[in-house]
Length: 547
Ligand code: GLN
Image (cartoon, rainbow, N blue to C red; front, side):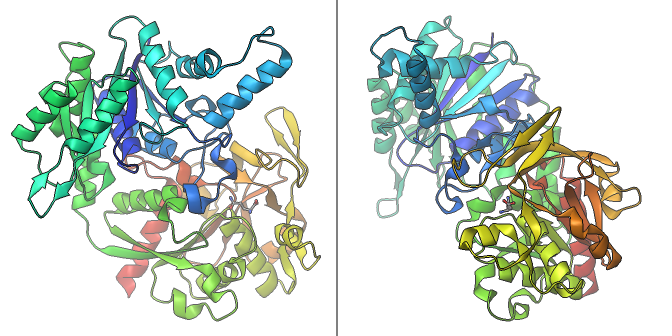
């Protein structure tokens, strides 16, 4: 039976609950325990798949094809445990399951209520895979007191009540604001937040307090006393230069010890933190910098490209260089010369995206990188636009484009070198999809394998010809144009095992130009940088040494 840590937040949002959960997961692993992390989101969307990246940041895709919250990315990056469909749930999904059951008559005519029907559904979700790991870490999205969150809080209270004594603990994250005028850290918001939590029957065992200033022992004692938490379980969380310092910092503050004490695990196994010491060393001891442009559409909200930003950082760690990311809005040069916006970077990355807006700018970025020998990594839409660029400017197909944009505008304007995929193979099944209709889950989602050509750049980078990467897209590059494009030097170096779907393209005579239909960033970790990002940054570093 797993032990459960429920992680909640109070006072304000964006305190880094996801990061604290992920770091705790890493610390428990360092002490030899197995962990799994879960996110319970109170919003009513069935999943984040249909939410705008401007609002909710990136959608993190799991191997088994779930579109989940970006916190699952943190969990994977810190623990290396691949997230699953069963690690993320929202009120929307819970309610839709309950309503489906009601329609099917599963409740035998009973009146359906939040307690017990909704709360039971949540408890069943939490309990999935109970026998698989030592610790299950469940983070509740939002802050205590949010209306949507109430059924989740009630469910975790009941869950802990149902389990044997000592099987579940509660960890609560709060903020200690600093009043410059009086030079004081204020504990009142934390007291109120814990009061709110206790009013719904949850007594936190561990308090994690975000603070910009050191927390004096006197304040720690006060928080402990007023919140009914042992003083040594009041853990300070200070701002860090890099999120990857969090496991070491939390360890230093005693978080893992406090959690193990709360479970009365004694003596606690000694931690082996060498992985995180090496990560910290790579952050602090760098030799040089590289400047990378991310040419995208959702550049106002960095969280929209969270995993890409992190994967670039990992690539920097592998090469011991600092990676400076500049966000370049592709739309700005949709209708003008892109060069002034792209000069001076050591590498260009065009990320995934949906819709036509900004795509002419992305095509120009691909052209700029190709003709100026700048390392280029195109991800999903970034690969598709590199193919459109090649078709237009090298293979003489002036009207090449993606069917996605014709579908959007309702006009037939392009020769579709990128077309809508209606049918594909996953394992032994053929999956069919129509355009339009239900927006959720209509994409090729999750892990698919690809075969790389012997001797290609990517086969060298991966060190193998058989790979598996995560996908999230509706459109595909059409193999109809493969021969023509290859004659001009754009090699289709990665294909689906049945040879029908292009997975990777690369320019033959270029220092480093790779487009991938999948999302390699989702699998990169600080202690195991993704090979494509490692080599992309290596190429950028080589260029930076030349200029
Ligand atoms: N819009 C493109 C498609 O659906 C690319 C998607 C993406 O970049 N993730 O195929």
